[in-house]
Image (cartoon, rainbow, N blue to C red; front, top):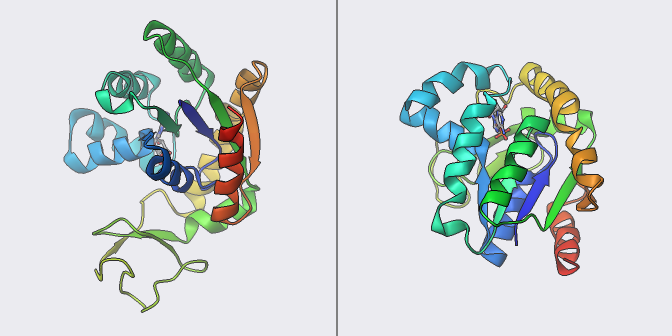
Length: 216
Ligand code: AMP
């Protein structure tokens, strides 16, 4: 099964993608994670992307389209994939349509996760992860049981994304509303889009997505 999770930054796409990955063996393809890995590794396109990402702008279509084209050729997407953070504008959506067609693949469903802007700013500006195991936390909504110690692996080191501050979040939301939100019409007109309430608790959102997938 091939899916797109569409929604603004902080809607919970990554969290839900990981749950679907575990349960169904689908592969999460997060362009944001791939770009952050490229930045950390200091690759050529990582160096190019870093400043753009830090200020919350979109990295060039050529780069992200090439990354996805490459990933769709890998054997680990054969069982299915979940696109998280791609496509982010009409040019990327059209490139994806062409890519899937040329590979004889199809999209089974686009799930739009709806969350209001103020809730997103609060969610994103408080989030951080364990530097060792990647477990996600939040200053207000999900603190470690013992302050400063990861519940899962006991590490005392945590990281915050450079782009998870209020100013950048507001810029990222403005870009989402202008460039990415029109994709709701792109997929909606084909009848392949389902809206899900992303304001609900993680388990409830997951249950709702599973119901949608049962109907595919
Ligand atoms: P995310 O983890 O999806 O919030 O992405 C973090 C940042 O990576 C974004 O703010 C962009 O700078 C960049 N990025 C991720 N995916 C894309 C994409 N599909 N197109 C352009 N830039 C992207």
